[in-house]
Image 1: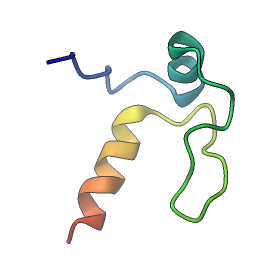
Image 2 (image 1 turned 30 degrees about the vertical axis):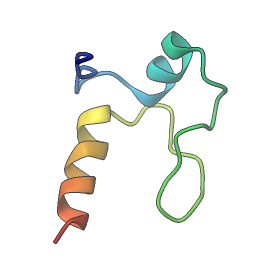
Image 3 (image 1 turned 45 degrees about the vertical axis):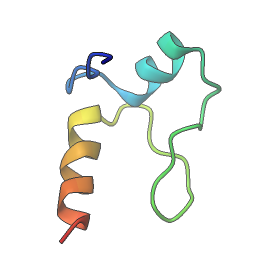
Image 4 (image 1 turned 180 degrees about the vertical axis):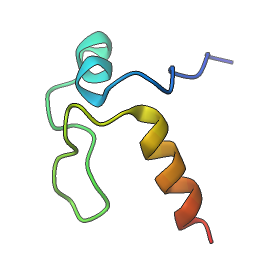
Length: 51
């Protein structure tokens, strides 16, 4: 099982290290996610949406 990405990693860094084109990670409304947003914040938002 692969290891989780660190929660303090930013979206821009994550996309660069994985070789993804900029704008791959998107907001629920379809817009690009800001590159300085942290992965931990995205996880928290996803947990809230489950309710």
